[in-house]
Length: 346
Image 1 (cartoon, rainbow, N blue to C red):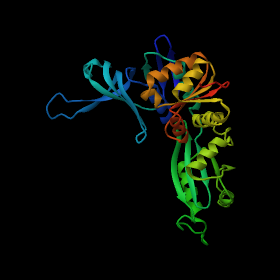
Image 2 (image 1 turned 135 degrees about the vertical axis):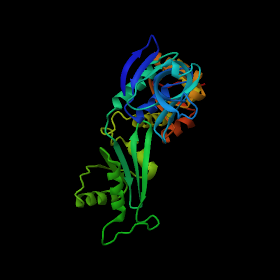
Image 3 (image 1 turned 90 degrees about the horizontal axis):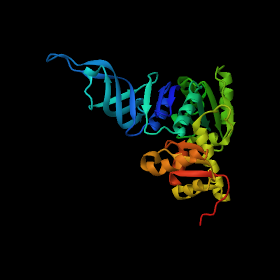
Image 4 (image 1 turned 120 degrees about the vertical axis):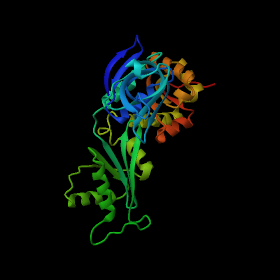
């Protein structure tokens, strides 16, 4: 993410997203009524009957009605009403238009109120830009789960079954088909960094297999008690890969929720809007954890808490709904906090 301009007086920021992850961050910052401008294309009908419509490059500013990040196409689609266009003759004002934001294209957003936590999110995306792709593999002799770790959560890529799962693969004189398929998939994904983990000795057997193959892959090896999505989450929570995942928000989310769970037993957590509001009013909030759904489902109530947390310089962490962490926060009512000290809830 390149941050070109932040204007608190004008409630405006200009950025150039570098990746699909950046577009995902921007989508979370855009709400109905914002003004968003950028380059776009529009089909223009020919002057004569029978002429084919042609695509023309235009610049538009929209009053936002809806913004959606489409994972299938990795596009940020911003729908709204045109309030400014250039060339003006190509686009009718107050007409509907969809701006398809792409990596590498400048986008400008003007909000009704630009908050510190909005810019914190941009800064987080900026720090993450250009980082190396980290691939996580958790495996035993029955299966291997493969996923990239991204700011938006775990991006699962494949699940490969081993020799014991339905007897799909059996070791033969020609080698180990399970390991062969796993290596083929890893090479196909082209990770810059990789961690292989799991229970038992199968990961060590795979390490020997890589050496026998003279593979150029240089993974880190760690242990987990589980495989599958549970094993992936366990690996993130363990802290064993902190140096490799420094700057990844998904790891920060997981650790914050672990603190909240721990605090439930010693009185240093608040869960749900009622408890969090009381904790905010008592200046007791150290870390505020908010599920992003609350910004659409309970925006006014959530904004009030966010504003106060910002004034009191509490740390704000947003979690997405794409992982186990997000589900836990929704189970707490969509909002929770790590406290500086215990409160009486009566």
